[in-house]
Amino acid sequence: MDIIHAIILSAVEGITEFLPISSTGHMILASDILKIAQTSFVKDFEIIIQLGAIFAIVVLYWKTFLKDTEAWKRIITAFIPTGIIGFALFKFIKEFLLGNTYVTLIALFIGGIALIALELIYKEKEHHAATINEISYKNAFLIGVFQSLAVIPGVSRSAATIVSALFLGTKRKAAAEFSFLLAVPTMLAASGLDLVKSNFNYTSSEIVILLVGFFGAFIFALIAVKWFLSFVQTHSFIPFGIYRIILTLLFWLLIIR
Image (cartoon, one colour):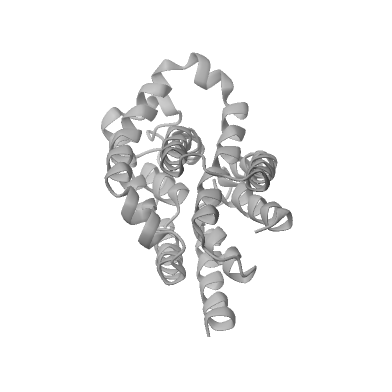
């Protein structure tokens, strides 16, 4: 892996982290296209640069993080099931799921069909929660349970949380914002655990690559989040479902075959 690879992957991460199309899945597929071997460092890179994208959320929602304790209570409630499952399955995820192209493609394809199907039956109602603070603790916990499905690369943490929030009675904008904020403790925990496991055993050139990835992901995430919030208020998620299906088929036909 070199600096050019780091820039490309940081763009992929920053753009896809908060869209319902799986950032991890896209980075695995991008690594395949770029012929980047799935070494231990590359797997660390794919996890750690998510901190850059997460930092974009902290910058955009700093008032919520500093002042809105009610929102934080719901975020922590949702994080609990994800934290438990992620910690328990950490070794399995790192060794068998991350970097698995076939698992990623299958998850992307099934997720695309699910997004389209769920959108066709979903109807937003006036009484649905319009803000994060209107989400019940029970629903916040259930959203966290659904987020746990994202340990499978290709599932998409964003898709799992947003779709579950919608069907638990949350309006689109609130569902998207809750997904953004829930990503912060979730990805901080994942990246922190990975850093501890790696023992910070990086060379100086690897540290440079990580920094390039971090700041690249931060910039691209800022742009993507602002666009996505505007998009979801007037559009459904069906285009993302179609995109996932087309991407899977193209990748399977042109790359795997």
